[in-house]
Picture 1 (tube, rainbow, N blue to C red):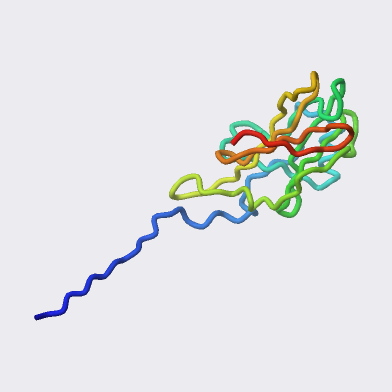
Picture 2: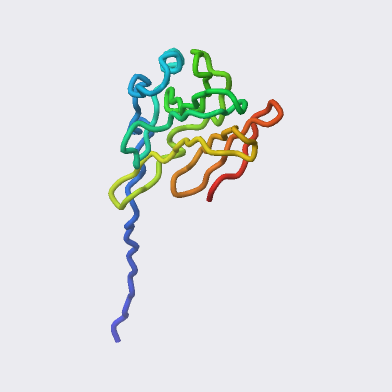
Length: 163
């Protein structure tokens, strides 16, 4: 009697390897015309480019709010230098950041978005907090989870955001 062998083949249908961080779309700070010139100059001085998500339809990842106090006017930007991004917070009239938060490699936020491609997925938003007139900075990994950075009692604290 002939011997019967069953052979199983595993076929990978997953998306190709995600793009390297060097392929993350980034904008020059000059693209953000609604941002005060002092803040744009400060971002340029820091060597920043602003990474854009795969969902971006207009320039994103620079947000306005009252982050350090209820009556303050500040801008938070996701600043990418050498493939690593951090949140920089500027007063509206300053070229120097007053805070730096969440420094992480851009490649950590590149994910498969279709069977044929990948995209950058880190996005900032200004969000309300429990303190009247104070904003937090939502730092989101799109379609995954987020954290919210809030200034409390003179310290930056990381709070759970949306999942």
